[in-house]
Picture (tube, rainbow, N blue to C red):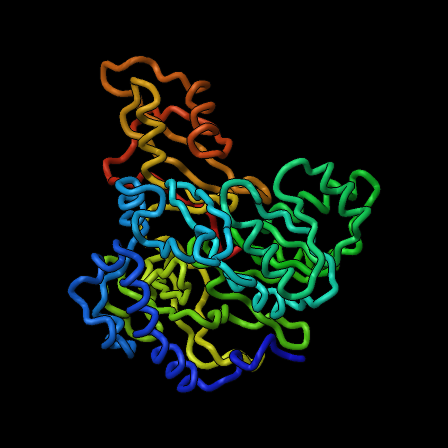
Length: 421
């Protein structure tokens, strides 16, 4: 079977007709059971939202609004249908996650709720294969997104999680997985450590990665080591949004949007879709009855590509991740928010401005917090600040005093990674 299902090869008209015939019912149900969403869409006749032009009249929902609502009304701020997640009225119980921000997200009921199986199938993963899943199972849904998708596909999963590389090498050498799932750079760490220990993981020949950039040189190195690695674009809120594909073993341009979602490219800071081919913010509407996100602004920049993929899948293609529409930045699979940098500044006196610089150190992301001494302030304790970084960001990094000060340009997070190499 070439495709995961027939949805992938239907015509654009068929897909649009299906999605927009279902959308008014979704909106009616969602606004009936999610009071905050009803308030968000209070000026809209939801039954009339049956086309892209009509959808464009709805306001974009931003993560900051979700965070504010959740702080006012924990845990979900009125954006979740509680009837479908709390185990009452015959509903199944579910998992609840906390992503950086913090943002609380429920797992929707049903098989593969984040739609990861389709991306795995496009990456050449098949039923019966063994998957070493090195996404985190702690707090955030990353590990479960791939776990649920792999199980739906008929795979066996080893829930490796993150860290304890020696233990992961030992497990992989024994389990002999064909597939790696995890962040792009951790696969190199795993393979290198295995070779150092004299137990090369030659069983792994496929990989599906996310949560960071798969740089061209990194992909080439994996290919030279016998591992064909593709990537998908996913978020904790929405699951898998788009994924790469191949034909006859050759990687094809762009990423194909997932089925059962509506993807728009919107001019940042507005509700208006950009012209075809223009870079804008990726905005997604899902069909998740438990956690319906309507015109959800991801904060990520991308661009729609013309035509269809040569693999035969007909859905819209995007160029993938092209930067942030805001300064919220993903590092080692975790988002870092400007509010967290503000927490670091507030963690001790004596700090004027601060800027978190994200760069690359070899094959891994690295963090350095640049701080300027406040006028007439106490001396900055860089050691204590590094400890605060690990506590607040859940990531290690270094601290450096900016002796010449920092520019007064409002930039709090500077992403200096080169995504072309």
